[in-house]
Length: 200
Image (tube, rainbow, N blue to C red; front, top):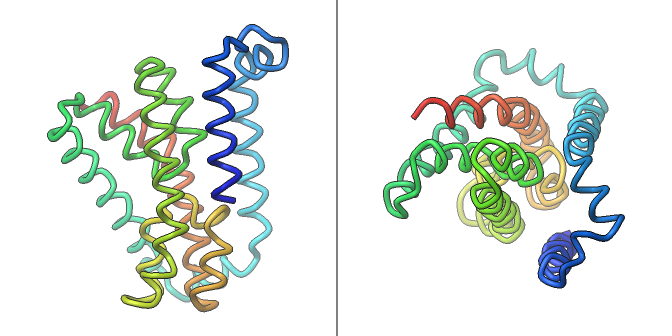
């Protein structure tokens, strides 16, 4: 999956550099990017609805189940502030980019619409790199630290693309927490991007 994401990214860069943005397929994708984004969000909703065990686990944990997503969101936003101070990027852009929580397809488009193509590209790449980093760090974190900590680098992707890594390297309880975290983080991303961009 990591290799497919990298191949898609490099292929897109090559198409852009080759001037293929005027070809019909690419033009159709670009002109319908909002519809593609809504379809993606709909598919994420389907994946959430398919996880039946999540309701039972919510009842079991009550309010404590929100600790992991709250910590991930707070840590990501703090990282966005620090990154903005280090790079000189405006804090509204750096925190909005960090609030993508690894959901690169949504954050790239949303921030691109708010702050322009350059910020959208940074958002896409930084959140894509977060997902790729998760694939490599989850096995190490599971071995050296503990299973729930594996959810942190995954962010919003812990319910879908990085879930197979959770299933392979953690236990059943962590997998359910991972799915719930992904649901909460995915639901929060559109709000957080808009909120952070307009806050600073």
